[in-house]
Length: 293
Image (tube, rainbow, N blue to C red; front, top):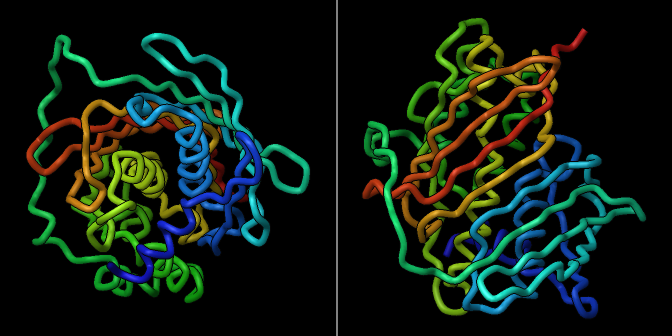
């Protein structure tokens, strides 16, 4: 297993403090705050630690309240809202420096038989035909606002093999394109043993879900984002629905689009498909989208 993936898995392995209270580390982010995917994934881990293993999360709804401090540990408190016959509900609050920075509500259920349909997987090239981040990103070094941004971005992608289907927003700043983005991703290594659980794959998928989701908003306006310095952005809320089992160590297509942006906020919708075409996850996020003055 790649050492960076081992580090990411340790990051998601929260320390129990006492009943329904957990503590997690943070790592350096490409922006001066805790990466949203990290706090969302850790909060989901905390919720899962208080639920019967037979029940897995089928949805989560969350709000980013304050910028997290990457240099401080995060405390997660879990409220056991309900343990019903069919569904279990948990609420998690992430706290730093005595203040809540993030809240998450998650619902859990057992798998059962029922009506089933899904929209088809969109067309996309094979992931192996696309360049990995360490090969692609340096091509655009001159477009980043400084060299440090590129180095931090490369570090953030080490544990995740993420491959853009089309050119990313920072590569085409100034050119308005369709409000749609596609990336293939998987973690760098195979999960095994105690780390190879359905919860691990769900939480890793949650971690990655915040990485490129708002790209579709930027593309609609020809903006390069925080990497080029022409837009200030941040996640405001984040919702996910887990439809079918998936493995985060196998290729997933993350297809995203943006139906609207207004009032300094942009809305993005994402779908994760397994390589064989099964719709595994749906994601919706509203993000801050401001133009610096």
